Length: 237
Image (cartoon, rainbow, N blue to C red; front, side, top):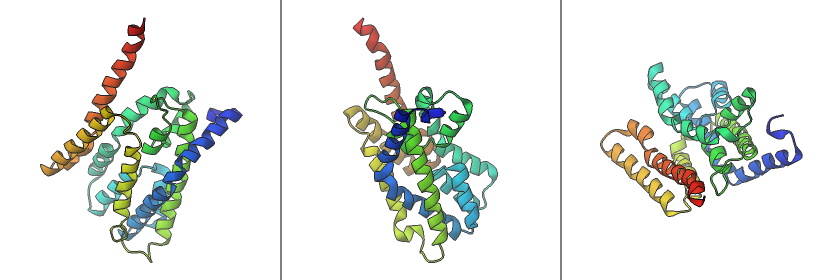
């Protein structure tokens, strides 16, 4: 069944869990900050926990709460979530061919698609492992849900997430993920270009567009890399 059919596959899933361990505490804090924020703006604790279990969307959950808290419309909520999660379209395409073929299994994997499961399931050649993907995804899902429960549970005794510095910790968490991927000059150039583009858009009051356009340098890099990979066999022949 799925990626757990053989002993080797099960060991690979466990390896995915092991790969996630260094990120466990930051992710737990991230989930706790969501539970804390949701409760402090008036969400029922049960609703916040259910949201984490059913959507497992990280930053998009924060955006959804922000729209609801300010009285935004359903359209505004949908657009905010779409902009933040647009990156998953390209990420899903790159990992799709390695995932199980059964529809129910692919739906399960789709629920586990997050930045960390995508990044940590890759090898040095950029190829993904479905077992590693599932292992990382399950570990993060459980810790995200647990973190939300912790945030909801202690909301009455804790100050805001900003006061605790959790918002800065979340930024550092994603920067740490990025740093581990910048192993050549082209990747570093793509990341810097994306950061500069984001800064420019924010400075000219187009921060909403930044979420959509910031990945462009990364997509250009990936396109160039794919062209090189497809040409390589023909040049060798």
